Length: 311
Image 1 (cartoon, rainbow, N blue to C red):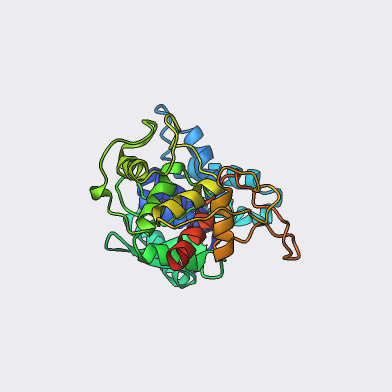
Image 2: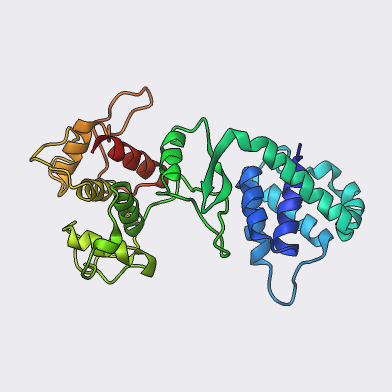
């Protein structure tokens, strides 16, 4: 099984020495990301043309420093600080030898493969992919799985167009991303939509979805920034419009949504069970929905999956 030291060293070496972007993404998530990403960010901040930092000793020293910065308790750092110094020479020698480097890669791949069964495994563009930030025990697992199997979500991709192994459940969803998820969930064929998007502030890839939103009267205002984060109420509205649901006048049971512009959509979604509102620590209802708060990828996956089932 991959040790914490191997994870940290492997991530740094593979990314900075080998430039293997997909390996970095997979291993960073497998090694819990927290400390690995801190190391990478610090390394990149010092990585200027005059110092390419290919010396393994420099890399390991940098890893040690960053791991200590990442945690007040050295025991929690992903580098084995106690054994680091005495292993420097052997590690450097091993990494300078292709056989030693390949051995490290094999060790990391084997460890990742052994752990993959605990995480979401899907096929993206014909490629078997493990999303290391979606555990089977996470509350959003079933929602992301359903959308991934339908090809509605695929997680992040690297500059080479291949999956990185990251879904980003806590990342904000933009309006144009929400449009794509909503329209694809409803089975809308974008090629059948004609006209122009309501706003020019949209990415090229998202223009077909923005055109559909305009032709289907989503009510997006001219000049609205579709690249900006979407709100919880906006995502609900997009889903309701994409599915062409008939929404009657209604009043949400939430104190912060009764006079909202999308109050009818909120009331409708609540009645269907698509949303339930905020909860207290004991599970009781807070009586709020936070309609204008940003919404993350895990929450949108739940709304979209329930939308498919209930709208």
